[in-house]
Amino acid sequence: MDNPIRLYDNVLVGRRKTPISKPNMEVGTDGKTPITHALESSDVEDAPELFEQYRAYAELLDFNPNLILYGPPGTGKTFATKNIIEAIEYTFSKRYIPFVQVEREERVRFITFHQSYSYEEFIEGIRPQLEEDMKQDEAGGEIRYRVEPGVLKKMVEEASAQIIKAESESSGISGAEFIHSGSRVWKVSLGRRNSDHIYNQCKAGKQIAVDFLDHIDLTDKSYDEIYSLLENERDDGAQKPTMDANTLDTLINQMERGDIVFVYDGPRTIRDIGVITGDYAYIKGQVAPHVRPVAWLKEFTEPADIYDMNGGVSLTLKTIYELPRIHMSDVQKLIGISNDINKTVKTQQHQQKPYYLIIDEINRGNISKIFGELITLIEKDKRQTVSTILPYSKKPFSLPRNLYIIGTMNTSDRSIAMLDTALRRRFVFAEMEPDYAVFEQNTAKVGSVELASLLRSLNEKISEKLDRDHRIGHAYLMDVLTIDDLFKSWYYKILPLIAEYFYNDVAAIQSVVGTKFFEKSGSMRFLSTQPSDKDTVSDFEKALLTLYKGIED
Image (tube, rainbow, N blue to C red; front, side, top):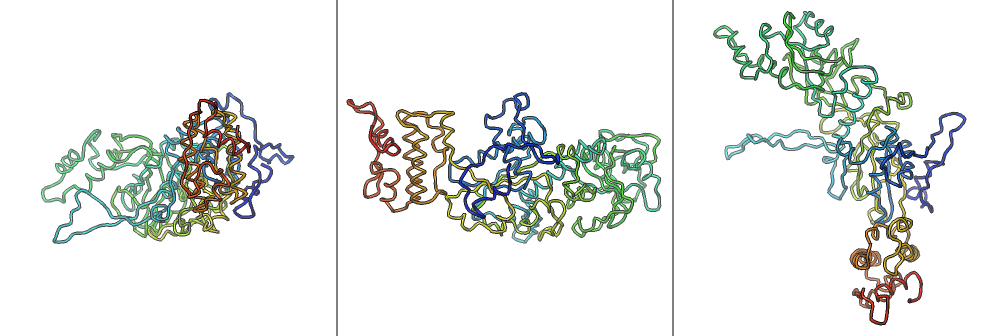
C-alpha cells in the first residue's frame, strides 16, 4: 500500500474520494518494505476471484490490528470481513484456508453492538450462579454470584492459549501441541515439606506423581473404588480418606492432556509450570508410582508469585486442586513469552493462528461504556505490554497480539456522529463504496434495465441532494435476475430506504426516483411489470430507464 495512514480517511480528516486500490509494491533497498505477490493458482486453489484485492486489508491489519469498514448500506461490509479473514489466513499460512474452516476451529466470533450492549457482555461481569441443586424456599437461601467472562475476554484466553502452544513448539517443547483454549489449570504439590525426593523424581522423569496406595495399580478405577481401597488401608477410627480419594481421582480421571499444572512452592508462589501430555500410568518401584507425564514449559530460577493472579487467594497444602481464577493469559505472562512484536521470529508468528472478533454496527453501541479500559489496551504497541486491573475480577488484563478486531459501520446511520473520539484514534478506517463492476461479472442487464447505470444514477442524485454517505450499495441488486426480482427489490428495499432518507419530503424523493413511483401525497404507486400489447417494455421498466437515460424508450 502506498501509505496505510491514508486509510484513516474521512472519519478523521475528510472523505476519501476514490476506492481502495489493489496494492502494487516493490521491495525496497532496505529489504523490509512489504510486497504483495500475485497469487498463484496452486497457492489459492478454489479461492474467491476477488481474493487478491482483500489482501490490501490484510496488510492494513498488519499495520494496525483494529480495523473499521465503513460505507453506505448494501456495500458488503459484513460480507467483506469473511474474505479479509481468508486473506489474513493466507498471509500466515501461505495457503488458502476457507472461512468455514476458521469457523470450525472457533477462531472467529460475530457480535452486533446495540444501545443495550454492555461492558459485562463484552469483557466481564457478575452473573448469578445457576445450579440445578440450588434451591431457595420461603425460609430463605443463598444465591451465589460469580464473575463471568464476556465474549472478548473468552477470545483473549483462546488466543493466549494459541500463543503458548505455538511458541512452546517453536522452543522444541514436545507435548505443547496438546494445549488448547479449554485447558484447565491445576495446583500440584510434589512431595511433602522439607523433602524433595518426589519432586526430584518428577522433574527428572517429566511427570507429576502421587504416593498414596503405592502398591496398587489404579488404572480404570473410579472414585468409589479408590475410596474403598483407601478405606481398607486405614485403621479403625482414622479420618475418612475423602481428601486422598479426591486427589487420586483428580490425577487419574479428571486431569486431561493439555491441562496446565503449577507446582507448589509456598502459599503465594510456584516453582514450575508444566503441561500434561499423557494418560495416567502406574510405575511400580517409584516412591510415588501414580503419575501423569508432563512437559515442562517453565522452570523458575526464583519462585513466581501468583497471589494477585489467583485473585488474592493463597495456595493451600491440598495435593491437587483446580485454580479456576488462573487463565491462559496468566499462564502466558508467567511463561514469559516475548512481548516485543518486532523481535519475535517471523516463523514463530506464522505458527500463532490469528483470532478474529467481528463487531457489526460498531457505531450503534455506547463505546465508552462497552470498551471501558480496553480502549487503551487495543493499540498495537500496547498488546501484551500494558495491562489494567479489571474492576470485577480484580485481575490484570491485557490483549494478545494475535487477536484482530474488525468492525463495520453504516455511514447512513445517524449514530455515526456520536462515534467515540478515542475509538477513532485507535482504529484504521477503510471505506467500502458501491461497486458497479459486480454487475458486469454477474447480470449486467435485467429486461431493458442496466443495473449498473440505474444504481449509479441513483447515487449521483442522492449525493447531490443529500450526501455521499447515504448512497445505495450494490448488494440491493446483487440477487436480481428477473424483472420480478427487480420489482421486489425496488419497491420493498430501495424505495423505502430513499423515502427514509428524505422523510416527509415528497418533492426530494421524486427528484431522485422520478414522479412515476410516488403520488404527490407520498403514497407509493406500483407500476406494471407486464408490457402492453403495443409495447415490448413494461411501464415499470420505462420508469427505471427514465431515471438514467432521461427519456422514455
